Image (cartoon, rainbow, N blue to C red; front, side, top):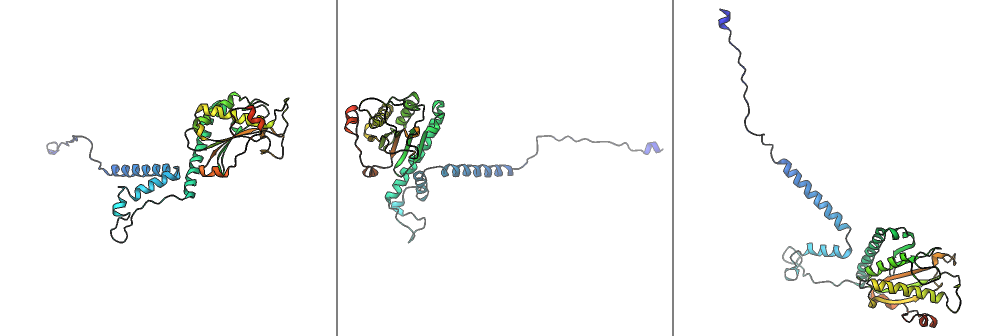
Amino acid sequence: MNKEREVPVRIVVRRKKGGHGHHGGAWKVAFADFMTAMFALFRVLWLVNQSSDVKSAIAGYFQDPLGRADEFGSSILPGEGAQAATPRPLSQTQVIDLRRDRLRQLGEELRRRVGEIPELAALSQNIEIELTAEGLRIQLIEDSSGTFFQSGRALPSEAGRRILALLGQELGRLPNQVLIEGHTDARPYSGTGEYTNWELSADRANAARRIMQSAGLQPAQLAGIRGRADRQLRDPADPYSARNRRVTIMVLLSPEQLASVAPVSAPPDTAAHDPEFTP
């Protein structure tokens, strides 16, 4: 009797059909916010590294994106707040600042280009690039072995030719005037005859000019070629130091400053020695 009353236990297994359940779209919104934030971050980082004129242009766009400020004013509210967006000319100081910023970027680009050339990267301590009140000054500084010019001669070395050609190529793309100067140390020229440090410094400046012009520097860019001899020593405390021997390329800041750069003529013997000499 008990066996007849026992109810068998049945286990029912129900299998789910179909794919995964719907998880919702909240993650998409979070991911979109993350991508927007990253985009904004990269745009800010890009803008921080731009020059002053680029920043001004971007600011002007956001102030008047449709370029219709002349018709409706620069204010988004009608009435007394609307102001006509009349172009304001830049002051002389602002223009000079923009040009200085461009020259600063040029100096950084030249340092990068020099570092990419193994033969020149090893001589980076002999190449000085700095921004001064007059413009961008590039100095090729010699050492006792004759880095850029053969010792006692106006004949450039292979490294000298390469760096001068690079400078001529880069500076030829600019509207700036270029002044090239040659310098020697205070040790008298050891050669015979009337050839002195005056001729040597002027001939080296002229040799630099010829190489730079053949690489792209425009003749109209030349503001002058000067032989300074030992009149502007880099190291006055050691007038015989090899580092006083150098060629200086000055990228002048603006045409207005040319008036403040008094022309210096070379001695008559220098002009006679090199017919291409242009004081």
